[in-house]
Length: 204
Image 1 (cartoon, one colour):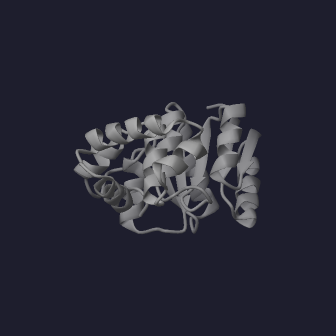
Image 2 (tube, rainbow, N blue to C red):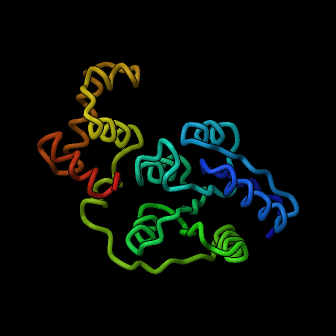
């Protein structure tokens, strides 16, 4: 495997991001780092350049739980994502890989362990055995498009169709059409039911 790679780092802790950058530069002779403090910055970086790997902090501003992981994976299907977090419980680790991450790294991991996992993911060799199976609700949520997932997240924040339409610069009719599609995919009849599914499986 060539050391010439591009890695996007999305983490809002400057000291951790700086330490990680130093480690990566020490182990990869030719590496370009695309750093971001927020999800919006990450999106801008990914639009400008397609990386070989994305390192994504679970709690970065704008992430909304696992929503950012799902959306980033949907929009960058061929780019592996490693989720990085201070949360190290088995549910978080398992859900991250089930929802699209190639691997999970705890922030407490030793630098050598991080580098080993990164190299394995880049080589397509990293495999994670599920701890629990994906729920039926999670499977349904994964069928949502990035725009539908975004709108569902806005529903969860209590925004009205009119407010969502204004924020996304679309018509209210378009928002209603997306809502209908969301309800069908999730097999629910109301916005409340859809929001509960989102909060229980994505925003948690």
